[in-house]
Amino acid sequence: MIEAFIFDFGNVICKFDHNIFLEKLTRHCDKTVGQLRKLIFCDTDIRVRFESGKVTGDEFYREVVKTCGLSISKSEFIDAHTDIFTPIPETFELIKKLKPKYKLGLLSNTNVWDFESQIRNMEVIGLFDVLTLSHEAGAVKPDRKIYDDVLKKLKLPAEKCVYIDDIQEYTDIGNSLGFNAINYQGPDKLLNELQKMEIQF
Image 1 (tube, rainbow, N blue to C red):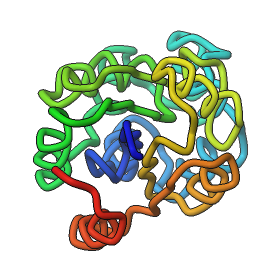
Image 2: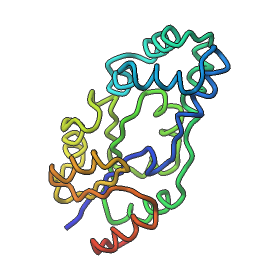
Image 3: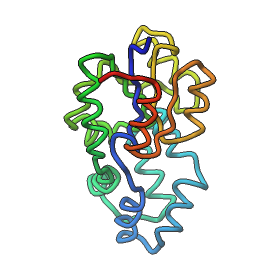
Image 4: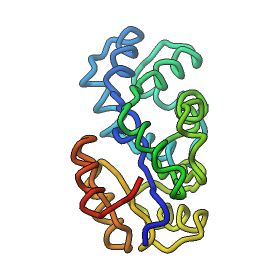
């Protein structure tokens, strides 16, 4: 019997677009969005280190500014970095419907800025019983450590949990660990999958 639902955040609860962040950075340097994306997301592991809590926000800011040749204040940088989310209303409603009958867990690769500035303040986050955040857990998906963390907090085995994530690699890992994992491909497909599992809400 299913006792809990575990949700990813990005592109499941809220859409996000890193291009919004990168576009704002182009105003503070001589590089294009494509060049900045390569420098920040491809040529270095700085984002992984930030999301796994291995570097602080200050260290992340300084390294990106130096790497990209930016002339931008830390406050402007944080505002640009965190202003990338758009709620997915259907998921908000689903979470509200599930809450009375199931435990709820959040399992997210994120960072302290995005969480404190945006995620924490969203109405549905208060409905979650447990939060497993990569920067607090010291690991990012698909590291098994982060999956173990959410199960430990829920005090449930994986078999009693439905895990919803938009990244196939992460749901594949989830299934291999015993979760009832669903690869999120939009609200309609998600509801169809839940109906197949005979989930009541």
